[in-house]
Image (tube, rainbow, N blue to C red):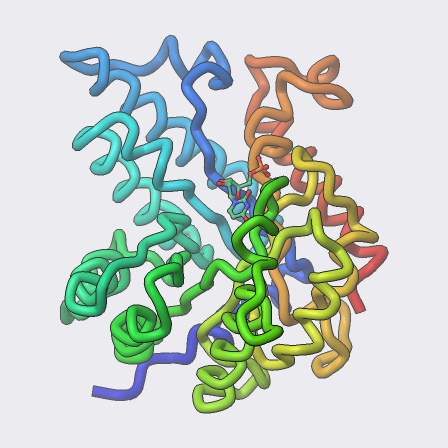
Amino acid sequence: MSAPHHYADRLHAAVRSKGTPALVGIDPRLKSLPAPVLDAATGPTELERFADAFERFGKGLIDAVADLVPAVKPQSAFFEELGPPGVAALSRVIAHARAAGLIVILDAKRGDIGSTAEAYARGLLGGVDPPRPDMADALTVNPFLGPDTLEPFVNVARERGAGLYVLCKTSNPLSGKYQDAELDGVSTTNRIAAHLDLICANSIGETGYGFVGAVVGATYPAELTDLRNAMPCVPLLVPGYGSQGGSAADVAGAFDEKCGERGGLGALINSSRAVNFAFSAEPFAAEFGPARWQEASAAAARAMVEDLRAIVR
Ligand SMILES: O=c1ccn([C@@H]2O[C@H](COP(=O)(O)O)[C@@H](O)[C@H]2O)c(=O)[nH]1
């Protein structure tokens, strides 16, 4: 069997082909779904009907943005909230995105002691031959349990040609309470960054990046720039743009000059609510509304791509 194609190379081919580092999150919040999606949903129980609505919404969103962006990031929490029908819906949404040629980053923030972490990694990233169509291309990972717990994720990702994004500096307001805490003069964030840089140095693909990335919030632009410089071969996943207040200027430091061409390599910038529910917020609500929610999401994704075009090198 030939070696699986390196995640960062697949990702960067997709970024180059779409000409943008914009990443659309798939966050189906029940209370925010467009009425036509809820009305069309069916199922023998309430949970199954909601799961059907999530699946219709997720697939509809993918269809709306597939030509515009290289990747999508389903948020597992919203699907898991519905129990087994939600998890089954998530599988079908992932398969739909992959069939549409998109890179799929599953935001599930898994982490556990090594032997258990391996089961998470195999279940969500592979280890099955041939790979299932609902397997994500990359997974978010929580490193709180320590460096040894990252190992199984890295091993499975390497086997499968998949990627990882390890939480490093998260976008939430109190992330610094734990992540800025220093031990021997080094913050938790910087300790994680040093470890990821080391892993990446041994796993670089043709585009100059490793397959193990870091999550760094757009809401901390100075740290984002510092972390980009501290981990030059680590691909970044940057949430916090849009609804959380991060701007294009705030994420400019996430890209490096190594590949200096239009499209912006080295980072993906995520937006979820602002694209998902564009039909219900200005400037798109007045033009589209719930009946044309997919057009509203496509317009919001296009606006994001344009916004980022000003800063990607
Ligand atoms: O530090 C982090 C890590 C993950 N997220 C996730 O990204 C999206 C952001 O959604 P928006 O609607 O664009 O705010 C969401 O799924 C979060 O769980 C994050 O925001 N920050």
